[in-house]
Amino acid sequence: MFEGVLKKILNHPEKVDLEEIAFLLSDSRVDEKLFALADEVRQKYMGKDVYLRGIIEFSNYCRNDCLYCGIRASNRNVKRYRMKADEIIHRARVIYQMGVKTIVLQSGEDLFYDEESIAYVIKEIKKMKVAVTLSIGERTYEEYRYWKESGADRYLMRHETADEQIYEKMHPGDSLQNRIEHLRKLKQLGYEIGAGSMVGLPGQNDYSLAKDVLFVYELDADMVGIGPFIPHPNTPLSNFKGGDLQKTLKLIALTRLFLPDSNIPATTALGTIHPSGRQLALKCGANVIMPNFTPSPYRAQYVLYPGKICIFEKDTACGECTKQLIKSAGYFVSNSLGYRKKIATE
Ligand code: 5AD
Ligand code: FES
Image (cartoon, rainbow, N blue to C red; front, side, top):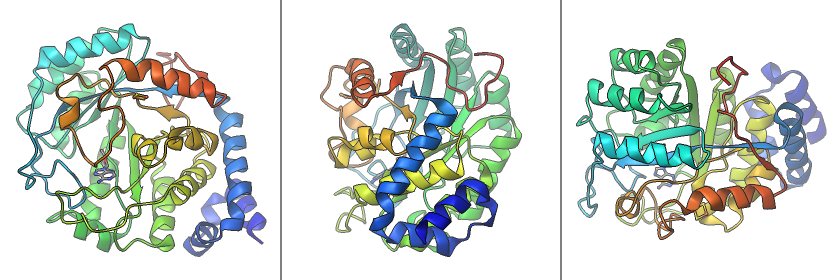
């Protein structure tokens, strides 16, 4: 029975409905077959290559109050920091020198960095032969355009959950529809776009997770980051249960079947809830790892969720560590820029 649905995803993904996906998510007899198939699809499209993305978390100021997030504006226990433009650029150079060819600039939604200051950082980093990814939240369409023209290649903006009601509960004053409009706009402007979601948010069920799969498929997301929700003690969700490993792996595997050539990271959150979380994700369809290059002392202050791995590592240790991890899982470290589509700059 479930074999039929798996086949349908491979041959006619556009015909698969929410019930069918929810069914696959609910039945543990599917898991082994699903994981093997996801690895097969991944190997068919990208071989055993794994892309590295070096992430710099350059500011933990945030104007938003997402219920799940440790750096939400209302959390007064966070020691806030902002890196200077030249500090960020210097850090990008360190990443580049370690052979990592994508620089991800991530922060809370921090309007302190205006259009020009972000553009300056992009332009300086683009003098190196790297791809630049922005992950700085919702800004104006003019800013998105300007940064694209300044050389930015990709934009990560997780949709967080494709269940409208849960989205609105989690994001006071915001709507899923608005989020979708931002993602579409970014795509129109020529960015490779990264959507993605958390697994295990309060109120989610297999049906809501099925919506996440269909959402990224219909959006044709170039990247999809999927991780478990991990309750943070200083948030309104502190007493809720977190997302589980197996369900997160299933969502990754299903996403791989629907989007055979998209980039799917083995997320840090997955590595946080299980010591082999990221290795397991690589075997279930993921093909990207994002080593943390945020310099100390800032790194320990960028705490979206508790227990985050790599906090006490030397601030360049994750580069080598992730390379080892990839090899020990049986994959190769790619040294390409890691675009979804094989474009000329590679
Ligand atoms: N648990 C897991 N993931 C989280 N994120 C934010 N807070 C948490 C949490 N408590 C994720 C969001 C965000 C990404 C940068 O981190 O999905 O988009
Ligand atoms: Fe950071 Fe292993 S990836 S210490």
